[in-house]
Image 1: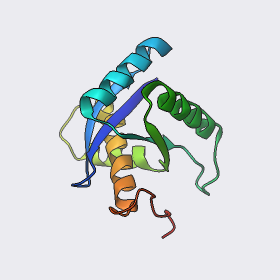
Image 2: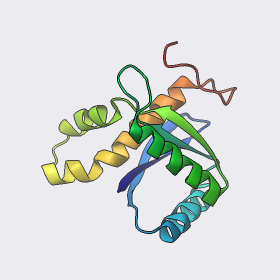
Image 3: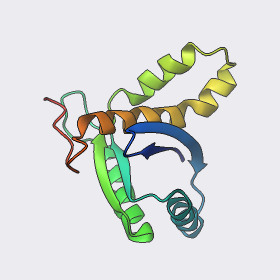
Image 4: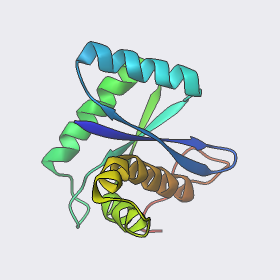
Amino acid sequence: MRIGVAIADWELRIAMPAENYNRRTSELDARWFQEFADQEGIGQFVVGLPVHHDGSESAMSTEARQFGAWLAEVTGRQVTYFDERFTSVEAAEILGHAKLTKKRRQARLDKIAAQVLLTAYLESTDPDHDEPKSLDD
């Protein structure tokens, strides 16, 4: 499974794509995420929560929550879940305008989707508070 990773500057409220990580074993994954969090000074992870169009959770939501719980445990960082509806579609649209081959667009898709998700999260939060506003606001 490939995971798109983006990072943000909380003060500037800017998200940037970082990389795609291909999961291997639990031990190697834990080491990679811990080292990444330490090197980048990550204080919190935002994990995309795949939900249905009506906002209800799906089977994939359960997997995302299990991953988030594991991530919090192995890194000691807070994990927040955020609605990831349409992030891949938006990322594909962004990449569609780039003059890249199909293979190169596909290779960038997950990290751009992560950037889209993180940007939406940053835009939904009040800079003076940690809690994001509702998507309905």
